[in-house]
Image (cartoon, rainbow over all chains, first blue to last red; front, side):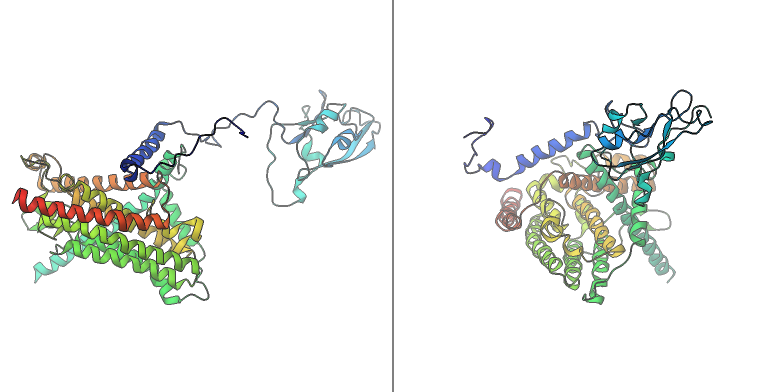
Length: 164
Length: 352
């Protein structure tokens, strides 16, 4: 049974004198490599020149704020539920009077942690979020030396307040 | 007495310049090798350290000096340390008999651009090049590592096999030149065209040059004959146990060897420092400038050879060991013998 129709029979003829002295074959090889001098270089000079990410690229998470700079997250836990890697944990707290400028809903996340070593950057949290609070940005996760530093706290994830 | 002192001083200066020059060229050969490899593979090569990565060899050397130096517990300590030194020594010694340029005649005397014009120059080169195997052999044996030993045995047998064909080629060439002195061989190739035929030996011995070039590649342990250091079978070959600058010495010795053998190939077959229309140029410029031009011509030819050797390395795959031996003993040696016979016939009956 043939898998493809590209199969070609192996040529088992004894080598001719021209093939035996190898010189034509070597010259052919050298001409191929010399042709590569004029080819385009594949290298991207990284820090100076960056290759654009595709529009569906999923990078580091951010926690969003609304237009008035209030945290959008209401600690519903849907992202944690959607997460297949179980990377997200949170603790909810009730908004006190006078805190309306900080939190948009009556309930907010007192603690919100994503373990970046568990995260598989699938983006299900982003899809699950009813409040448009969690987003995957276009930043590549930075490396670090300790395991603890890969557990991103709420302070690490929240975007800076536009009002301040 | 005073003349002798001047003579010795002049020679010491010349030796220093030649040694530093060949070290410098070998250093930049490592850079060139990486650049050539990069270009062949559509990459860019070293381009961060300095302009176009020109400081890269210095950075590499600095790194090698600061690395930890390990001498294996079971190694033969004295020989282990001597191995790279010997490789380096033999690599540098060959440069002594190469004529780098024509004599400079000044009012105070004649300056010879050659360390020693001995009348057996080629034999000296052969002797020293054969000694180069000792560096590899000692290194491989003293490491007390089976892979290193195997690889050094390979290197030794390869060098011996290819030296035969190389020697027979040279016999054919020496029958033509009638002299073993490199200075005389170069003088015979004066200019480029002597009114009847090309003067360069390449045009008289094209087959000889081809065999010599292939054998030189094998002697240098360069691809496609780099079996002694083939990673896939013998890890790293004879320098597996070496670290720090001792490893650097082995690698560096290879590049110096490459430079020196390129110079020798240029000297023997491509006219050394001779170039077309050199008599007209000699009449037009002052003698010192003319000598500088001659040295530059020789270096240009040598660098051309170095680049070609690199070019071959990044094109051809490595030979298998039995293929290597078959090529050496069954193809090159008979070819060299036939070449010698034809040369003899031509000299005896055609030219007379």
